[in-house]
Image (cartoon, rainbow, N blue to C red):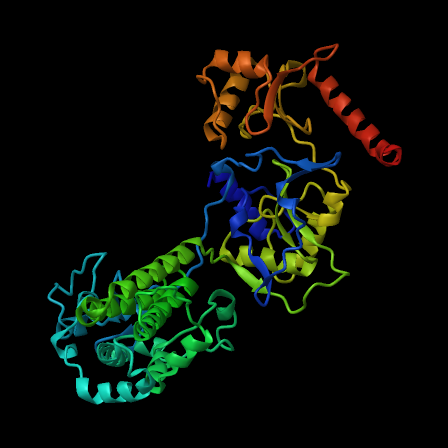
Length: 536
């Protein structure tokens, strides 16, 4: 940040009662409030698309919630280790300073162990993006892994699926299933295999089932193959996909469900864990190894219908991961409570809600999660004072937390709140505010009439308009020069994302008369609100 910002941050750390000014935290970074898998956000349907002002609320124009990128703090990612502090050559835990880390997988090694592990690189001068030798082995089936005990396993599988003997695909299908069973045994012994050996315990990973809808693991698949459970599961629709495909026999459908379950193991891992962390990388390692086995022993022996459905499943998994937003979150013990007062995180610049929490307690928790993540706050927050600071922010319209007002949602909906009047400037907070006598152009909200900034000349207003135009979500017609601004916006009726620029028009031509008019309108509006409602 700027030197002045750094000095202000240092003063806040020394004095917890000093309130400064910081950029906003992106709305997507505010943690979710969950009760089990239920999102406790208390919003009504229109809350996030409404503009809330002390004069009332209304539905916002499209693009109203656009905020200049420079207004936000830099996103701080949820930090997770990328590698394990464990030498995979000598199978020994050690401190990070004694290990070298692979840039692609979660493995680490002692330098002294690398050559013995097959590394041909100069271990004293490894590149920053060094990949270990085992990463290359993950993508192939090694000679020692090619031997499959066909007869012994085949007899077990044939017995487990003996009630399918009349199926035309039985013989070929059981051979493939026995190959898959043995591949699973190889995967269990592969690096990190223990992570996928048995079901994830939701008592230890408490939010796992909030994210993963269909848990799966190597041990469960092996057991279902040994017991022939896939036959009954498919018949009864238990964790089964309804395949409306006349070209697939019953055994082929079983094969598809087995392959789907294996892919599900990796999908769950990649879905739940943060991309790039050590556990996510474990999923990538095993997915690569499985795909190598699949290509060598399964793919060419599988019917086209099975492959088509499997590819469809893979695509759906990829899409789910792309759409998944693994945001920060926290759990609350109780469900909905009638005495709780919801708290809204309110952006006073666009006059819209960016996030809501069901209670002050949850709002406090959310604030501390952001603080502990490393985001800058206007005031020093600690576990001891956060309750007091939030109380101050809820009562004082000049106090902000993480760039936002925190207001009781009921007060917003009933327009029972005030907004701190801002000095109107050129569009750059570092510039001196124009003298009241000299302001000739105002930047306003088209619907609410709220004034944002004042300008002393057409040129300064034009520069602000150009910046706004470049950042607009909705396309703006015109060539974008000064005559376009003057003719179509300043002297016309066009707007950008609900913002207009207009000339000051008062009897005296003085800007302070405009402010006086605005204050008088606010006073009359506040005094007359209930009589207007009665008239309606």
